[in-house]
Length: 249
Image 1 (spheres, helix red, strand yellow):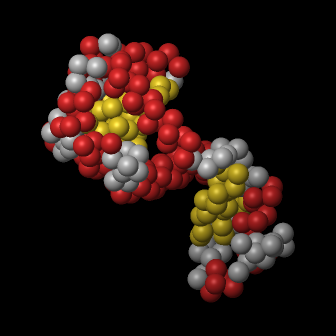
Image 2 (cartoon, rainbow, N blue to C red):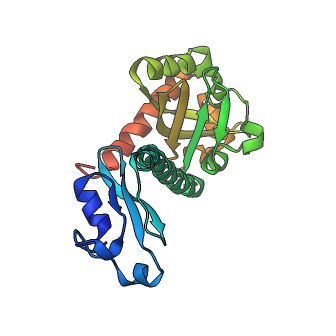
């Protein structure tokens, strides 16, 4: 917008600007293209989004001299007032959509991170590609599956799955550092957390650089019937991983 245009004038005044005959207008300059188009009269109404931030104008042009009366002006003012929040809402929805698309791309390409969502009944409702790579179940297989199925038999017997969810509900977040079961029955040690938000549990965990399930049946047999040993090994693995991290990381 030109510094001396009717649009700038309208924004600064914060009110509709009416020109019945542009040939007699001396408050601002009329661009040549409007004159060439045969515009004779115009009405400019500023559009503000919430917070009184200017967005644009609602402009009506006429090729004949026209007297915009109070009814016309009030109609345009009301229409512009309605447009402001609507435009703001559409902009926020567009920004949210773009953010969701970026998040989706990140999640779908994070193959070493198992991210999934379960409902208030602990049923999985969203299962991303990383979860399939780490845990073995496809999205179709995991849909509706009880998230506790990822816990070992011993941990379920000790109520670790229920304790974890209870902590997430009470504190908003719960650590998830333990051995987990894959679809094929093998073990994998992973660390992460469960975040409870709006009645849903968002679980995200990462498989360490070394796959502790590499031993397959041998590892499972070594820990079979020894839940305390299994838990101690998990803590030791986690502590070793913490030690390997750079200071201040």
